[in-house]
Image (cartoon, rainbow, N blue to C red; front, side, top):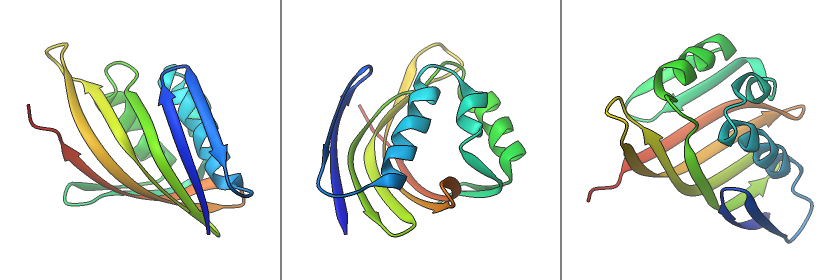
Amino acid sequence: MAVLNIYSQNENLKLKKTTNMKNTSILVNANEHVKKGEYEAYLSYLTEDTKWVFVGERTLLGKEAVRQYIKEFYLAPPVFDMEKAIEEGDFVTATGNISLKNVNGEYDHYVYCDIWRFNNGKIAELKAFVIEKKP
């Protein structure tokens, strides 16, 4: 098992690697595109038949469904940081914080635990546990 601690505030990204973490590096690179609003570049990291499960909310099947989700929910690039990542085989489990701009122009803040599955260097699956932070 490999553990990666990530300390990130927007562009200041510092990685501490304990072993080879190929899939975690792919995820970090993909997420940099999301932070910059480069959604099509981000989507290139996904398999065509990717499956995203937001536990208790919805399931997205395929890259096109993810593209539509991004159009609907990312009114501005999300602000997020990954606190910790644990990689084992084809899986990366990541925890962190994410803030999404709402229709009122304010940000809603969440904590997350994501379980990512990779297939040949691409994101094949996501199981996301997302909890809204209360003021």
